[in-house]
Length: 268
Image 1 (cartoon, rainbow, N blue to C red):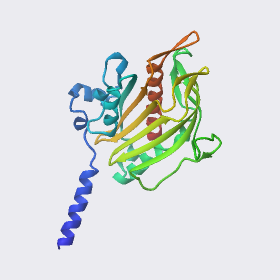
Image 2 (tube, rainbow, N blue to C red):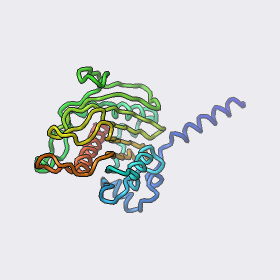
Image 3 (cartoon, helix red, strand yellow):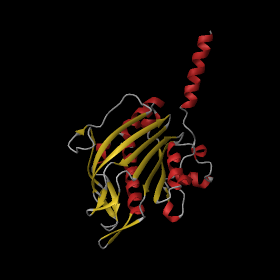
Image 4 (cartoon, rainbow, N blue to C red):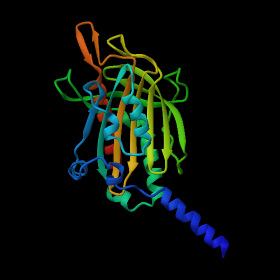
């Protein structure tokens, strides 16, 4: 009898640990109107170079909020963030909690599917343009020829690390280290530049100075998407020959593309 009671207690505890939070509990500092806007498809944005705090739009208690607080305290550099929401498609509503977690985990590791990803380019007249001409995982970060397939899992670990290569429309060929951290219904993808990022041959972001984050939190109502970019030791604007590169705008468009990628993959 005692064993049965103990087993039930453990199962109950697991259910509590993995229970999806509500939007109102993730954003207690949002007004009812803002919650409705989020549900209706509004994307909230924040730029530290404009005096805003990116933690103000981060889900409370999330892994991403911890990173955002660091971004807000950055002494030299800048941070940008965006918050959006995806209602659960029908196929996710019929899944068990563990099936949903596995599906989401496999999606955010499908780096190769970012090939051909579109973004809005100012240089192309604010028109959709291919952001990544190529994208794939690497077994060796020092060799772009060490291509490997996207991994597929049947269970979700607490963390996973890998490397990937992407040919960027503006910043050229880059290698990134990618770390995934999972805490119950909170998934955080941390993308750090393993190589220098250059624009027209000139370094815009030093090696290791960029962290782009894609966070997905399973809420009662759907997926909460929180994306951000934190760039250390770099002024917001970089002068390259006769062109001024607005880095906050460039990285906001990139994290927006990440958001669009995740949204498309979830809705497939």
